[in-house]
Structure formats: C-alpha cells, structure tokens
Amino acid sequence: MNWEKDLNINEVREIRTRTCVYFGCGAIQKINDIAKIYAERGIDKVVVMSGRNAYKSTGAWDVVEKALKENKIEYINYDKVTPNPTTDAIDEAAKMAREFGAKAVITIGGGSPTDAGKSVAILLKYPNETGSSLYEFKFAPTEAAPVVAINLTHGTGSETNRFAVATILEKNYKPAIAYDCIYPEFAIDDPDLMTGLSPKQTRYVSIDAVNHVVEAATSKVASPYSVTLARQVVELVGKYLPKAIENPADKEARYYLCYAALMGGVCFDNGLLHYTHALEHPLSAMKPDFSHGLGLAILLPAVIKNIYSAKAETLKYILEPIAKDTASAEKTAESVYEWLKSVDVPNKLKDEGFTEGDVEKLTELAFTTPSLDGLLGIAPTNATKEAVKAIYTESL
Image (tube, rainbow, N blue to C red):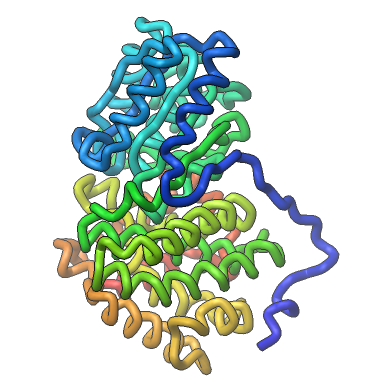
C-alpha cells in the first residue's frame, strides 16, 4: 500500500488543532476549572444548550450546575434542542440568551446541542441576524461568544472543530457552516458520560466518525495528517465498536471510541468532507427524525465505489482494519457493507421510507442547499448530477 502517492507534495495544506480538550474518564470535573477561569474573566451569565434528557440522565448537569453556582455564574437553560437542530430553535434560544444577558455558551450533548450552541454563540454577537441568515450565508461572522462543549456521544467531533449544521425546515435545507470564531474554547470528552448511549446511538455515532475520516482522507484537500488520523480512527472503531455493542458499560471501549471521534473531528477540520455528508444532509432535511449516522452508513458503500478510482491506495490503507477485500471498487464497497452488517446496520434507504421517486428531489437538494456545493466541489471524482443520482440509487 502506498497511500503517500495519492497526495501532491507541491500543494500547501492547513494543519489545524485549536480547542483545549479535557479527555478521559472523570473529565467532567474539569468544568470546575473552566467555571473559575470564566468567573475571573467577568463572565457571570451563561446559556446552557441541551436536549431534554441526556444532560441530566448522564449526571453531567449536576456537576455543571454545582460549578456554576460555586463560581457565582448565573445560567439559563435552553433544553429543547432536537436531533438535526433547526434555525427556528436557534433563533428561540438566541433570543432567550440575549434577554438574559448571556456572555458565553455551554453545550451539553452530542452534535446537535453543540452545533446549535455554536450558532447561538454567533447570534449573541450579531443581534440583528437570524439562524436563517447565518445558514443561508447572508453574512460571514468573525466573532462569537466563548463556547464550552461538553460532549455526550462518541461520533460528531464537533467539540474539536469549526463546523456546525442546522436545518431550515421550510426549504428542506440542511447547510453546514465553518468559521474560526466557533471553535469551542474548551471541550470535555468524558467516556463515563457515554455508557448510557442506546445500542442504536452507539452504532450510528461511531459510524459517523468513520464517515468523517473516509471523506477527510480522500478529499481534494486531504493532507498526510488527515490520512494518518483516518487510519487510526477506523482501526479503533473496528476494534472497540463491537465491544461497546456487546457491553455498553465497557469504559475502555467507550474511551477509545470517544478518542476516535475526537480525532475524527480534527481529521475533517483538516481534510473537510465531500460526498457522504453532502448527500446525507438532504436525507435528514427531508425527514428530520432520520438519524444522520444511519444515513451516512447507508451511503458509504456507494460513495466508496465511486471514489475508488481516484483514491484506491488511500482507501486500501485506511479501510484495512474493517474491509477484508480492497482489490477493486466493487469488492471494497462490498467489504465495507459486510462490516456494517457485522455491527448490525444492514439498512438501505428503502428500509427508511425513501423511494426511487425521491432521488430527483434529493439530488436537487444536494446541489441547491447552501454550502453542499462546496463539499461536492472537493470530492476526488467529478461530482456530476449523474454521479450523485447513482450513489442515491445504489443506496436504495
């Protein structure tokens, strides 16, 4: 395997690492240090972004609330963030946070509260803007309130990068934004908080991490950093996901899956994303209850088949831990599908209610949703409408 030949040494790449991450079992206690730092800086009011339940059921909130009270930081909690957060919810939370006088944002949850929180952090600095104007790129923010991301899942990587995603419901748009001002200042990755993830969530979030790195290692802006990170992420997920499925309380398995996801976030902060995410966003925009990680899993084999001709050596290298046969595009796609089945994700789009009649609309959304053209533009093969339709059709 000679993945190094897939990269052009004469092209200059950015290598990014920004956020201070507290990582490991018990890391939630570091919120005490963070609260102390913020209090000393004069940050005396924060908005806490969360879903309805996990922030409390994991025990995270007890520790956070105590730290805020001990440091005389007042808080308001917006606990209505849903999977695939909407710009309407972001507007509601931003209004609440502004009226309260919040000076920083603490997010507790998976990718959805983190992304919604980053968006609110921007709107705190731009009170005349809205979630829609942000996600339709009507302005380009250069500042945001400080963000602390307390992560409750091992998948998104959003706690370590400059990306956020939200859905504009009335348009079936699910764009992604990327701004330097929304790197979380601090992040907490505590595997102790992740043992309660459901079996489905456990699978889907780790498959999300695999998708992040497959794309980041094969994009037109991939670097040696994104390729080598990708290989280790796939290796760790391949080894530890079956263990977490077998025993959800296995802390070592959660630790390494959490590390894989963290690295996955850094990996795509560097190598960015292309087909799988560009094509999944229309799926969960059309069906907001549809799991992002499941959509990525369903699309992955067809995407691998498409990009194999351009990035065969890289794919052989990074997928070796989970793919038995990488000798051809078809065999690699088939091997990855076999791996997905082995972790009990055999699903196809038809199983989730999509039909051949949806392919045209999905393809149109992939090309018209703000930001997704940017992802398609850095795919390693020519992302024509025919290519996108073929991926959707093969995934049915």
